[in-house]
Length: 345
Ligand code: ASP
Picture 1 (cartoon, rainbow, N blue to C red):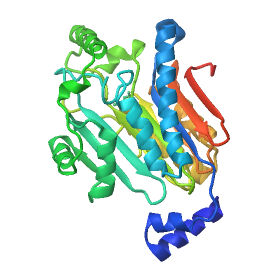
Picture 2 (picture 1 turned 180 degrees about the vertical axis):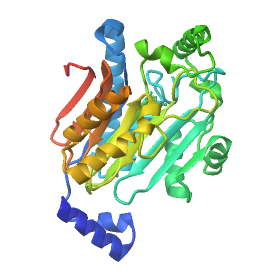
Picture 3 (picture 1 turned 45 degrees about the horizontal axis):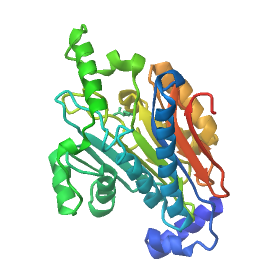
Picture 4 (picture 1 turned 90 degrees about the horizontal axis):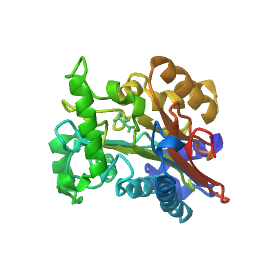
């Protein structure tokens, strides 16, 4: 792989673009993709057979959408976006349709995307009318000179770029509305009713953020994450999902990561980038690095959640310290797995 990277760097220097570099790759490498649909208190006891099947089917559809593109020779970024868009369009996950409600019964969506070759990244936070926030993150990465746009400005940019805009009610679901009412009741009765929700939700909370990481035929890594954030969030709260380094990270010399969990902890501990730094500087495998951060650093700090990780050779790790995480991967050669609970069945 190192040799391949050197070739990449030389090609970049000579031709000055990713496309030119990709053209220079003589041999193709095995493709792979991994996805998550959120972590949390996901147990057999609180998921019916029908619900479990619905999650498995949607995860399989998302994986397949990304994998098919990789097989056809598309970039890892294309694959990550395709997989995430399947989940954004599904009410099962906390992203796009099915996003959680804010304190004021609206939806404020966050997303981010990063490419591992040259650190290209794009992110959006607090958008209310953009149908596919991950698409907007890509536009920010490719069509603007910025990395992160927020709120009304981001929506203005989306309109300018011709992205599909929808009324905020497009993201509504009854299930999430009931969760908001329950959360507000708990918060209002608590000792700190002006505080955010999760202190009072943790015991039965499912983070439903979605994400994908992939490696394409040129060995290039990409990572993306899309979310509605945390139920009953207030004051323009932004979590880790749109923060490059916290919820999303990709570096071809180490790995690509997408996170789900209690965002404040992922921001404080720079979780996604920390995992890749351990791969890069300590020489750890993605499994070792993921375990050190998720079961070590994060857990010791009291943070809950998980990540999906992939490296340029297609090695995948999916550690989490909650009871479950909707997750799966698909690799060249037909190896594939979809799991929900923490016993790997
Ligand atoms: N990480 C997200 C946030 O804190 C929540 C989630 O993973 O569902 O906004």
